[in-house]
Each structure stands twice: as C-alpha cells, then as structure tokens.
View 1 (cartoon, rainbow, N blue to C red):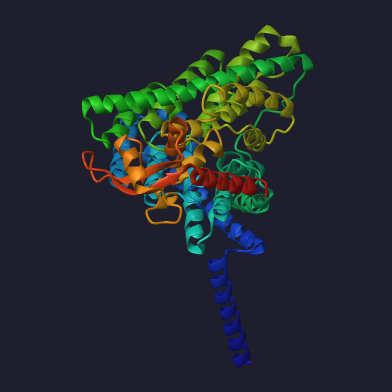
View 2: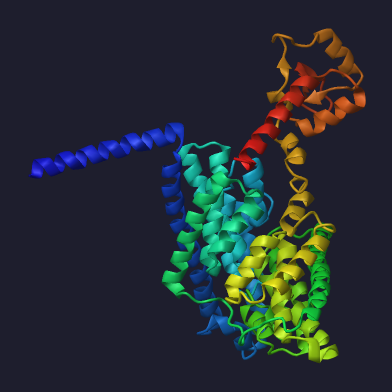
Length: 558
C-alpha cells in the first residue's frame, strides 16, 4: 500500500515538473492561464488588503486614534505641533527612500503600469516599485493627501511582472497577466469586481480584447472574495435612503453638473502639474537635494492640516459627509479648494499615493455645492441634493482617470445605489468629453506625455519609439547594404542617424530629406568623428512599423 502511494506521489511530481517545463518553454495554455490568473488574483487581493491594513495600523499608531475612518475629526483634538510635524517627518522618510532606491526621485504609480503595458511587454520596475510602495505607505500613514489605489495597482503589477519573467511569456501574455493583477487589486481595494475588471481593460490595457476578458474577470472575482472574507459584503459609503431623480426636467441639471465637474477635474490636474513644475523650478534655483523635496511638501501639508484636518489621508470621512449631505454649501466649497491644494502639494512633492480617492472626494464636494445651489433655485423640481454629490463624485473621478465606464460602475459598487444610473451616466459622459479635450485624455496619460512618452494618441504614435535604429538597419556587408561612399557623402552633409535613435526620430528625417536611406553612425564623443555602422532604409523602417501595428491590431481584436 505504501509503495503504491509513493508511486502515485512520484508520478504526480513528475507530471508537475513536465507541466512546469512545458509552461515555461511554450507559455501557458488557455486553461492553465485561467488557473494562473486565479492565483495571481488571490495574491494581488491579499497584497491590496495587506497594504490597506498596514496604512491603517501605522496611521492609528502615529496619530493615536482607534478609528482611522474618523482621523480628520480626531486630528482636530491633537496638539497643533503634532499635526504640523507628522507629515514633515513622513516626507523626510520618503525622501531618503527615494534618494536611495530611484534614479529620479519619483514614486511609481498607475502611469508607470500603463507605460509597462504599452512599451515593456507588461513588466514594471522592481526596485523602484518596492521603494514606491514603502513611500506611499509612509505618505498615507503620516497625512499625505492622496489615495491608496495607485500603490496597490503598482504592487500587484510587480507580482504579475515576476510571474511573466519566470514563465518567460511574450508581450501579449505579459499584458494579460498585468491586467489580471490590476483588476484583482482594484476589486480587493474597493469591493468592486465589475469595476476592477473594466478598470484593467479600460485604463491599463486600453482595449477590450476578448482573449483577456475571461482571465481578468477570474482574477477580479478572486480579489473581491479576498475583500469580502476580511471586511464582509459591505459598501465603502452608506447613503441616506434611496436617491432617485424626481423629475425628468431635472436631467439638464446633470448635463450642466457634468460640464462643471469636467472643468473642476481639469483645474485639479492642471494645478497638480503646475505645482510640480513650480517645485522643480524652486528646487533647482535653491539647490535643494532631492530628498528634501518631500520633506518641504510634508511641512506645507502640516500647515494646511492645522486649519483643515480633513485633507489628511484618503479622506473617506469627508467624502461620506458630502454624500450624506452633512456639509453646508460654504464648507463644501472651501473643503474642495483646500483638498485640491493639498493633493497638488503632496503629488508635486513626490510623496506617493494615488489620485483616485482625492478625485472622489473633490467630486463629491463639487456635486454637493452644485446640488445646494440647484435645489435652492428649483426646490419643487429637484431631488435630494445628495444625488448631485454622488453624480459629481463619479464625474470628476471619471474625467481624471479617463475611464467613464469603470468609474461609473465603481461609484455604484462603492455606494450600492444602482437607482441613480441615468444621472451619474449623464454627468460622467459630459465631464469626460470636456476634460479629455483639454488634457491628454487623462491624468495618467498626461503624466506620461510630460515625460515624452506618447501613449495618448494610440499605438500609431508610441510604437515608433519602441524600435532602435540599430535593430532595423542594414549593417555594412549585409545583402542590399548601402554604398559606403554614398553614406560618407551624406555624413559630411550632416545627414545621418545614431544607432541609439528610434524610428520616431528617423521617419521624420526621411520625410524632410526625401532620401531612400540614412547612414547610421557611432559617436564616442561630441567632437569625435562619426564611425559608419550601416544604413537605415526607409522601406525597412516602414515595414517594421507596419508589422508592429498589425501585431497590436491582432491583440486588440483577438
């Protein structure tokens, strides 16, 4: 009997080894991939819950409160010196970590995940990612005015990158794994399985290919199960009673609310980018080291928090007050303005965290202000003004994320209120239509555009930057290579490319010069003589570009 058991165990072990070897050599099959997606969903969900618990524990420890959901109210009872210094000390810790672990002193977040999906076969940085997770944890725990969704998305993406590297999968499978990790992280963070899956497709992968849909849904469901096992089947926000549109004549008000929210979203994004440019200029002028930048930002946050403690952390307490109508018109307006300033200082100070939760809070406050005004003018033809807060919450967040579908659904799943669909959809559609024409589609894509990573216009714009001239050129001596004498004459005229240049640089040169090929040279220094390595033919560049476009189209429509 024991011999039979040992034989079965040995047989199972050999089968597992053969399967593992097959997966690594040829990639997972569809069924295998679903099981991998399930495991990745569980791991990402656990990571999201662990990060949330870690933030709550450190927040409670530092501020000395038993209920971190009421941190803003509790901070009002603390001595002002602690409210001032806690964010500053957090900024010092963040600056030291970033100085040690990153070359640019920048926290990695959702924009880097989108870049990894588009340009790096679904992989993200590891060392900088770990450091960014630590920085976001410290930032959120010490009063940084950001959200936790950005960090958990990047943490989950590191898991998917590790699995993709272990299995040595191609770009398509790597991106699918990334989508699974993101979906599970979002679902576990907000108990929102539908929105988690659609967020991964709409924001990160930026397509709705059917081959990716099933595993992403599996991972998203796994993340939601993890959340409900820990927190139960409850929504993040509890609304007072049922909110319904009382009168169809009220619908134009939600069109107008959407336009207002789109404008507020643009102001919020532009303020963040302006603050980033301003802090960068001041840092250079004053000669401050990189590690001091988060510390200065933390000190400024502490000053604001003394007078407006609602800006501390994620801000769910204030968002709940807005959704339940427990804020007056003046308070909601002032809180919204101060929150935008606090978020701008935090993110421009490179302190870490995400933009989604702040946009929910600013949106809810904006909607509440609009609701107070609208219902005051037309009390007989208006529903509860809290409905405007709910619609505004979705409208600002959707415009900031550039994700109208997933944001609409996540608002429903965060509140459990599905009766307000028409009002929320109208506001979301108008806000995203307005904001996407003023910025580069979304906050994340505008961040990338500011780094000269051109993803907003689609693959026809960014694929050219993926190919080095050295990888497409014909070397000297290759069949069909260019004539060396002709290349030398062109070099003397200043018409040449360096091997490290990309097709993004090469194709415009072909258009301007009208030549069939361009010499490719190596330069050891600025004053050195160019050394001919080969030539890039326009037909080869266009062929490689067309192949990349065709591969992208196949992936997005498979």
